[in-house]
Length: 371
Image (tube, rainbow, N blue to C red; front, side):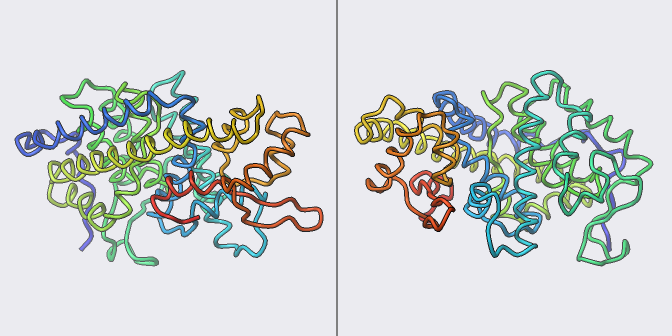
């Protein structure tokens, strides 16, 4: 029996605050500690770029894509990857679009508030030129949609979102709530995320867009210094509970149960994000000394920043675009290879340059020895 959208019940009239209060302090403290680390990182957009890619990978994986962070970064470095299946290539493009949509939303947020306009623009970028491009990018759906096993009818669905005719008003209510002074910002975010997923305003891309809203909301409300908060690892690891908790909002009106789950997700992810961001900062400080000693070059830090932003790259791209004089650039890469800082993924062949990776950074982002 399909669960139908909870028309008229957003925002919820009341929450069971005594259940939420014990979780609020620890979640807020964990987010604040992570933000302290984030604020200490010089040029966080560069140093944390592998975490940004990993978030795009994991958020897309919740929707069924299979691409890994290594595959995405290698694909970018190569401009393509020989022997890649069409399916995997399509997965990679979806991940790259996620990152591009996030960047564009961040730029827009500097000028306009979190709004329907911003969401529609981000959706256009998310679906541009990928499998969902026939699904009206940037346009709210005008037809019913439902969630369930592939090919199921509306009667066999697990969940039926709001009808298309009621969607514009409901998104207006959602936007208004996003700008209210709520009792607690993290709970407000929990409610906004659940409502967005329940409305399912687009024909495709709703899950990814809803998760993208998490760092954007935290940033806009001054909870974090930069729109960099990675929540998808927890949600992917707890995917069944994630969907069940969202479903229980419409089925049982259980906004409190959903909020408890979401606060645990924020706390767990803030701790993991802090650990990874701290490890990246330590690695960067260590590498600044090592690379300067190894290369004896005034361009050592410049080279290091370039490699942090692109931890998988072709040696020819480093020489061409790192902004370092060519003879120096050609000397730096072999020096870093010999020291074991860089590893060859694909040897040079004919006119094609070698593809290299920076394993220490990639393994921090992956959370395991993957490289």
